[in-house]
Image 1 (cartoon, rainbow, N blue to C red):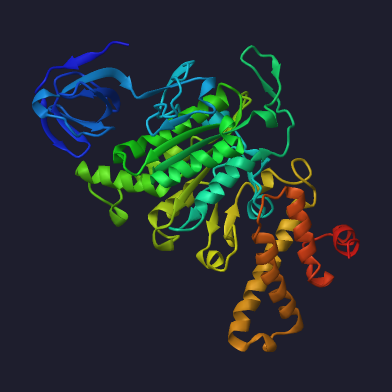
Image 2 (cartoon, rainbow, N blue to C red; image 1 turned 90 degrees about the vertical axis):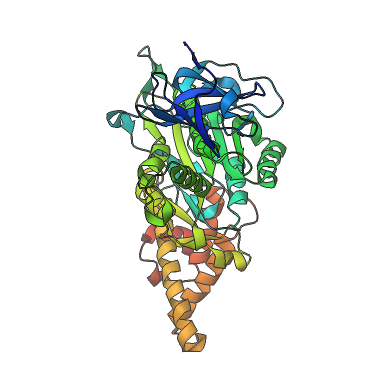
Length: 476
């Protein structure tokens, strides 16, 4: 790939991570560059904006020590790329794909653009097949399936980091059934099995303590061997935060669609990404929209979320579990609001449950997995799974209504059936939502059946007579 050099002295000004230059060469938007200052150290960057006379370079490393008069910029003539290969598993990278674990560089099998290649909608396949996370409120009530994008809506100070690590350690495919796929030569190829399930974990804008917690916990659990870990620190440039999920998803796409693995990409925290986007947009002088975020926030988030999915004739799949913290716990804030439009549901973390010592504090009623029906039932989990989840959800909703009523008239003023539902709601949170260790789906279902025995059989309208006889009466 040919490179071109700009001689010294083309800079007009330097504002934070942005270097403003006179345009002297024919270049393209998002082209990769190296910025070389008086210290001779190359700094990675990209072309952010340009017109006939000027261009703006986003410098992805510190701009300390740069001098306008002595700064050179090398243009590569192509967008930023990431050198990927099978050796990326078990390695730790910074926010721009550089190895930071003390090991050698990854042996590159391919060099891929970090913006990804658009998936042809005609080639997309329906997400299906159950992914077990070990968290009952997800597995039983809002199941995650292969190829889905299911965000986790949290708040500042809530234990989403702990949940993210727990999912990374315990996540596995429930079904090892082969898919009907073919390799490039037209030969039948088996689907990827459970031993080919891997994690891509990206941390954006993390304090050092949080980054070290992720790395150490994954290493001690043994999960790091099947994980590609990308860590962008809070002290890094805000422009790096815009690239961290793109480098991570490029690695995930390679593992899924080239290596044929089933990949779960966990990205935390999308809110830090959006804050960096707002900061960079403001420094570009762009007109702000809601709460100061750029008007293209929706489409920008879509370029990340839509990289999840399944493709026909490819053995691997890419599933996303992005995590975002809602500012002021406002689910109507632009970040969770727009994320909800793009993704297929949400898992909501509740501060009130956390204050009551319930972990994981998942608020079941506003949580939703729109593709749950495509990954559960007799083919993927258990025939009784969907009706059990439906009955638990309906009963818990009735129980929360009884709790509100008890707050008005007192528990003594409730009818007998309402007191049953109130007992159910309280035990549902203590026994099913709260868990001290990972549960299998079978263990989660067993807890659910036990809770339903609190209610009269006449209230179990979403269960068949056979299910009531087997799981309610038969175990009584």
